[in-house]
Image 1 (cartoon, rainbow, N blue to C red):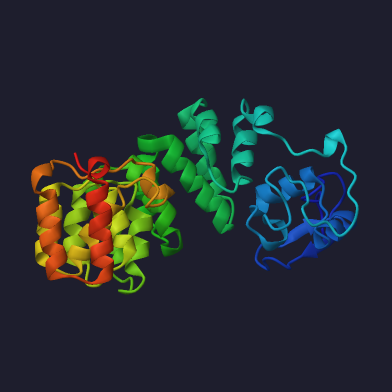
Image 2 (image 1 turned 90 degrees about the vertical axis):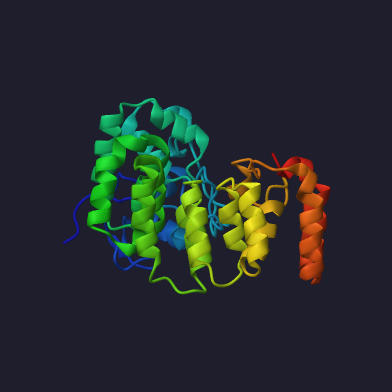
Length: 328
């Protein structure tokens, strides 16, 4: 016999167990909310309550069907929304830690306004609640969001917990654990943990996995690791190297070593041009450091003569054209 209140409206008793999105964590709903779920016609507060438990990434809740305020985009029936049916906004929850953490789970991304609101709460209470939520659910997205909070809000306050997560390592959470590691542990300790877990990753998948795990560290240790690890060219190696703020001496060294490092060096430099990279790279305003600007043109043109494929020529031209922005 089902007991408890509907996860969506939180008023009526549970009548239905709906496993359409996840058989391991089905929705527990009253008849009315079950019908509205299947018709993509939930009221905003119903969507919000489900997103807190299941995350907004479940198919029936995701952004093809609902906005971040819970308004249905493609309802299959008319929806009457009264004031009490509205989902809370940040201003409604910012002063209550538990409500604010609920709100953070319903966001597509953990952004600055929510991060700043969370930072105003007691760190120890936040850590305690984040850990309780992490261990209290089997939902991957909710667990990941709690690790993002550890990364972006708690920092070194979460160091003990992050070390425990490495001891009890679950490869499913490599990315978010890595993000939390970047802000909570000393760089060398954290990177050694991650480098070890990246060893089994296939050559094809490694560049993206490495960028996703490591881009927050911005450490020269990563540049040394790229040199010893990279065997094939991939755009993600250049993205990762760029956010580590390499020196011009290293760029010259990579150009001299030939492919794949020479191509990665060109990408690394070109990625410093605003609008050329992506938001993950541009947020750090990367530069190539310690540059003798008088030799840049000659060295790049010499390399272009040795490796004169169209990609190289275009990349060299872009770098030379934007060298004031790229080099310090």
